Length: 255
Image (tube, rainbow, N blue to C red; front, side):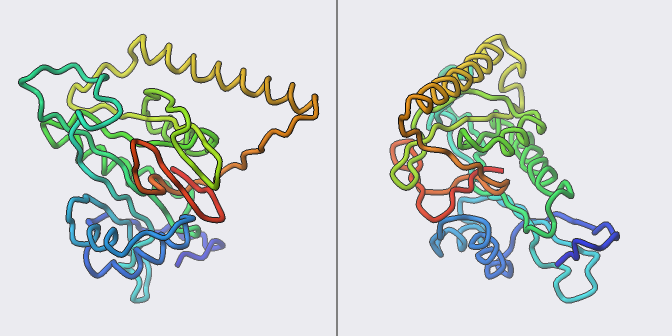
């Protein structure tokens, strides 16, 4: 792995994840995420069964690890009509086959953070989505208190589409989710009036919730404190009626 004290900038290359990455892929997921993914998930990733993925490797390493994963992103192509944002796309009966690329997990090992690797992986996702003629966007969910992840996707020019109340369920507590979209192939005008209004409403609601929390704390009421997540990944649990149920001792979410 990269020595954090080293002044040598690593040479990072990106490639599809392959069967030989299985063990390392599992190890990194275990280190980054608060839940254990089933073996079937990793087998589907490395064999490309319904999942499209990219890995980052440090080819400047002189040891045998020059082709070892140090970052990854996994995605799945889904029908737009099966997503939470079907209404954002203008299409008729002749365009029922429109698709979206959904980011499942995204992660970079700690010693390679802040080198632009996550950004490059997301750009690979966007490039692939744009190459699929009937794909209209890349989208994902971010838990509402993960400000580093929110900042990351805004920097990557993803657009805030909406807020989903009580989307996550973590250790007996409900949390909202922000849904971000990057439009491709004319999916939609990036800076529409609706998006501006949506963004304002979300920010204003967050401000009001902060004021209410401060008020009730002064009244001696018990207000659960939400800890911040570090940058890490994306989908953290199985889908059930468009909700995410997450377990574990930590609550890391989307990068």
